[in-house]
Image 1 (spheres, rainbow, N blue to C red):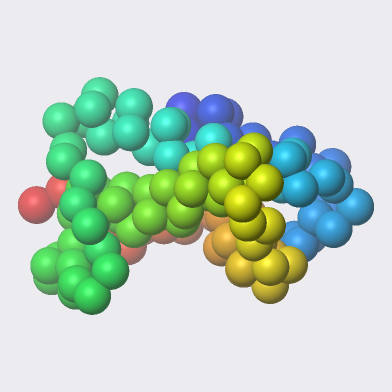
Image 2 (cartoon, rainbow, N blue to C red):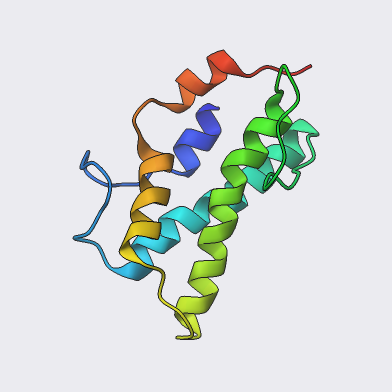
Length: 119
């Protein structure tokens, strides 16, 4: 968890999301960065990332489910970045703000660790 926190440090100077003062490239890049970090974390832990849309996690949920849920947001960030670079689509402020809010607060990665464990 500490490695994930270090690798995805938003460098937002403690500002709350949404980070409207920053450029689209910076904002989307922060979100997309989570995807790569979580792919590495899953690989290092031997967990397999799974699609989460339309699925309920098992009870109790394990680390694979936790990482998969967060990964879905980062993966969307990667899609947004590709679209932004191709100038085919700019996501709405609302979409970006929701993703930023999910990834940066309230709560913390340490809090999430209390609710999920490997089965």
